[in-house]
Image (cartoon, rainbow, N blue to C red; front, side):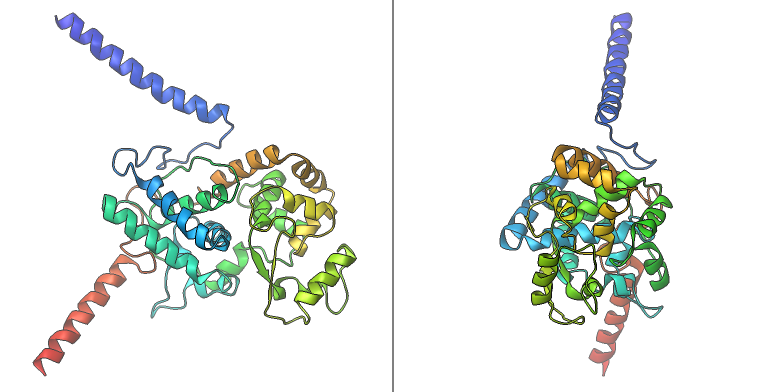
Length: 354
């Protein structure tokens, strides 16, 4: 009887080990990047099994009303991860200690609605599962669904991030985000410092296949002189939308399919119809031109490389385990929220006494 029990126990352990190894080999076979310590593909499988369905179902409704919000959420994830890591710091409001990361110049054009959507998702998730899912994890999932729900690839997201308790300075934000006026040399150097190779850089730039841009992000290519790498008809059309260098208007970033996540962005570059210098120079520069051409010809290849680069980006300098916190509200550190509640309570007590 005892030997039977031991045998059964051994079989269960063997099967469990086999399942773990199979998960590892599946991710390896798919060519996915390794998961950093503290994150997991199945982090909330038991504690919050409905997490991903809550996020996706809500975003399906959001994008049905306004598909433009997809690009906003994707960009929010980029701006969070490249500055100080994927810790949700870009979501924080400022404090008496100084201005917030989200008020730094490169972040002023982030959609205000994106911040509201993330906190709405946080509220729905916490109502279902309790306060166990970070705002940074929710931001990563929202970015993935922004890609998938607009026609892009569906991919797994390793979870388990914790929220940071400090935001980056404006200088750190400027130093880590690439301006639309940057050339390929700057772009490659900035991202190489974060362990991204040229293929990763070109793939991540493909996020510009959805969304809009303010004229001021590219009008230096139109005024006072037209950039010679820009198609003349395309330039003239842009001048109609942006009649002056300081115009406040916006235009689509991908003229072929602005609301669909596909490889048409690269077709734009090949046709000299890229919007930013940082876009068009990818086709001009010999180090990245062939990558742009291959992505323009093969959407599946682009999708595969984009997924790989996104998973890598989503794990930059993450906080895990006992680091950071799980915010009760995405825009406010927990200690700040507690202090605000205490002050409000004292004010009410004094008001009642008076």
